[in-house]
Image (cartoon, rainbow, N blue to C red; front, side, top):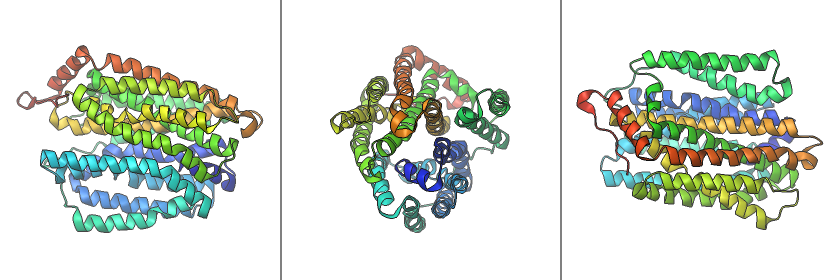
Length: 452
């Protein structure tokens, strides 16, 4: 999607904020519905939910490919996201419940991770090739045969499973979460054009604050909340949640700004832009495998610390780009950034569930997944707004200077990651996780998830 943004902007005559919405409309809906989709799958069946997600995602892709205007594209991206919310978390639940032997499950998750890494590496290249050959609508067409094939293969090979005891729905909490995320993101994206002090933007930020103020006490009173605020008594969980938001904000902002830089400033084709990102994606995939091994052997601290350093170095290097930066500068810079994002995933999930009762571990991991999507949305919103505020004289003339504050924000995200890595992975932090598990578990079920 990112490599298609310049082409979409030209054909649909979109502003920077319009391009932001083609990304954020998807990630916002996805983030809002991930936990609901997971609990729904537990209740009515994981295979059934996964197939429904595939069907909605495929239909949404068809609609996106036919979108006559930017407004319709954004709306159809939201349809896509409803289906997408039923895919990732539900697929992991299917794997966990299909492979009951511990070694088989580890191998299956390893295959899953390898395929994910491969898709990250090939996505920008495949997207660039489609945009250059058939246009931006091709990135949606390609999903249709894949989605249909996946639905059929699911019916043939994936067994149905349900939770022994599914969590109760939390519609009020779900609505409050959607209001919070949507109003905050809309305010950030539209603030530069409408004015930060305008009644609409101020009202949106006020609405977000009210939604948060109502959400927390409401969830504290529920027996089975959508998101239990008590989880944040665990320093590893709280740290993992914040790191997930800021790390994926850095990734979302990087992909948004860098795509505009490579195509609109440098004049590269979509395919060439995708090839430029290939070393970063390959580094991400390799570091993801390495990170998992480091977490298993030494815990979360080392990969998180190195990840923070990677973001800091990557952000500083990206702030030095010019309209004529050579591949010899850009590609190593992208690799450094790839190290940062590649190392962060495994310790986020591990830290989120560390010390949690086993019956709460899945919910905790779901919060981490949601935090990633929230971070991506906020990253695109913030970086796009920073660009809009500072951009003068068109992309080619003003992008480098206008984007520099955004790259400094990436470096700041790395600094926060580094600090949280040191604070939330030590003995004191693990002690808070143990105490939180004791408060959350019934007396006869206190068997927290252990951390290497």
